[in-house]
Image (cartoon, rainbow, N blue to C red; front, side, top):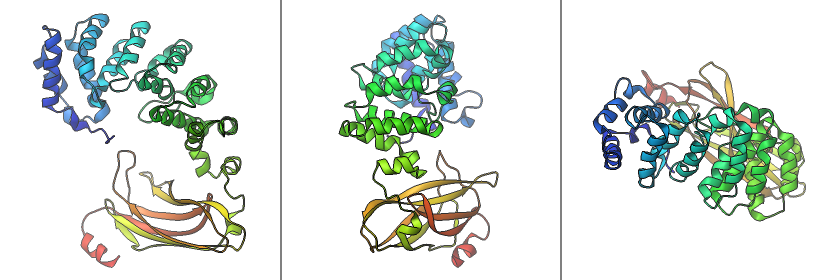
Length: 376
């Protein structure tokens, strides 16, 4: 799915939606709805803020009673499918905490059209045991979207959402749901289970090591979940996890005889890219399974660095063999990562151990750009 954009809530979309609501509830003031949405500060709002603005505008223009307002949304929700309509479950989050039963029914229904993974979280905080009991029921639902909600909604570290601190402290209440879904027929659901396990690994690696050992070999679908769910532990070169997946236990010094990585340009501008080339010569030992990654020390706004690793290759290499490759490193800002000027160190790693490094000076675009580019 393409990354959602705040521009999707343009005036034609809002007017079309308003007309749909009015077709089912004649008292709906669709013009007031649109004006409430695009009023003061709309242009400055990012995507989450715009979703909430639409929700609040609905709260001001639908019937004042929560049950009656839901009836209007129930009359049109089958015609409102896709991520833009995430304000349906957001309406439940904002207005429905005092009516748990009706809200659970609404979130179950709306998640099949967009997703209720964010809206369920305040209910988990407010009534943890009661809501988790309902989510265990959802884990057995016939609809894959509802089953996914059972896992995705209780992820301790769901991106774009507040962390569930009670599950960061103790994720054991989550495990019955993941056990139920560990061999689900839907890839959509299995990805969620793997991501939930990966969240848990960041705070409780011992629990995930145990799960991985117990689940491995049960079924090919479960094996896929285990591998994806252990990705943080693999990136950390956790010895137990690496051994489980057959990686060599030898140190990089014993496995690699020669290593180098070179940046073809020693400086780059934010929004540009850098071409990298690397070469490895492996020792004359037995064949070994190795995970070779590029580690980038990204400079943050504070001047500190945070490393992110990119997989270059994951393979079994023959004794005495060589490996050469290239990587294009993109410095374009993303919604999940903003780049800042400064010296960025780049590391070639083998099974988590650095074996070679280089550096690139990242520059802000501005005066003198042509002169700098001409010298790189």
